[in-house]
Image 1 (cartoon, rainbow, N blue to C red):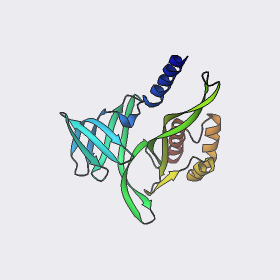
Image 2 (image 1 turned 90 degrees about the horizontal axis):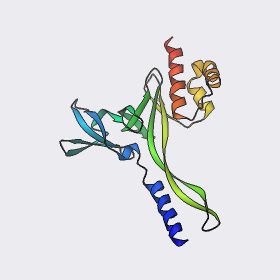
Image 3 (image 1 turned 180 degrees about the horizontal axis):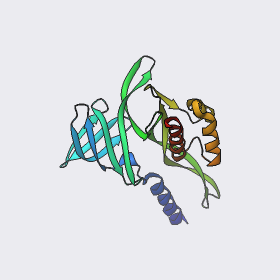
Image 4 (image 1 turned 180 degrees about the vertical axis):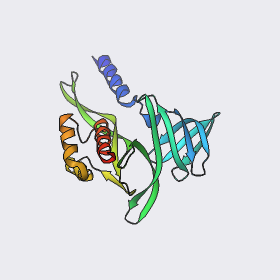
Length: 204
């Protein structure tokens, strides 16, 4: 029985800590500096610290968001290209600093995000202890931001009323579009579709 318990524990640990997230992997891509230098190679990004590492001919260089204009990668996790810009963001009341954002949709109203890894505790039934135990797992999560036509960046806190306020020029049409297509205001893919639809209304 003890051997079985140890085996189950090892499987749980491997499943909790063995998962790799996009920010922990190297990706093929390119980086453009604020001095307009373009560098192609393998990239690894760190949004927590707003850093990008790029490996060219086995030499790794690190760039901060202050030195980066733009970078793009092909992400095998998503099986798609992803695009990031360094943009000034007000982190305190009177101070702006450049940080890295991923562009999810670009238009009159642009949708940005910043990913992060969060830890959560989930219950799991234990046959060994004859009851529930709890284990930690990790998942990928996102903070979202909207950029108005004037260029100001504001965080979106995943509230439906807040979303409709952001899109108040066409809020009635957006609300009906969400209802017709069963779209959620707090889901990444749905937010992209909603933002694209709103922009199509503005463009027309």
